[in-house]
Image (tube, rainbow, N blue to C red; front, side, top):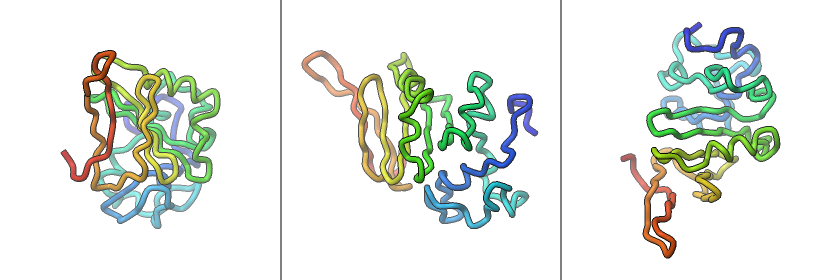
Length: 172
């Protein structure tokens, strides 16, 4: 077990990441259970799994500040984090797409979306659509394809600069 996993935590019977994450190397779309997943048991090809699977540990496993209610089998979503950009990722189970909007999750997720000096925000994959939460704003980007990227842009406005988000073709 990697040393950055919170002591006492493991995936156990949780395989939700095998459903909610997109894995292009396997042509596995977001929201579909991976063909290599033995549901509630684990990966049938664990030793040969692709790099995105090897590199991913959900925030529940890595963050001691998240309680047991944040375990994906309980919350019905998988949390990720991109530290260099201060972006929280919420990958929802399509069968429970709005679970992140329930307490005790919603108020904390909204706090993570609060503006920061480095421009942090929250991206939520809710069924087929992608939402970006930034401050009090919620941007619905629609269905984001794997070949698209999320763009954060500052635009002038009557009250000063306003941050907007949109989906753009191609990776930058």
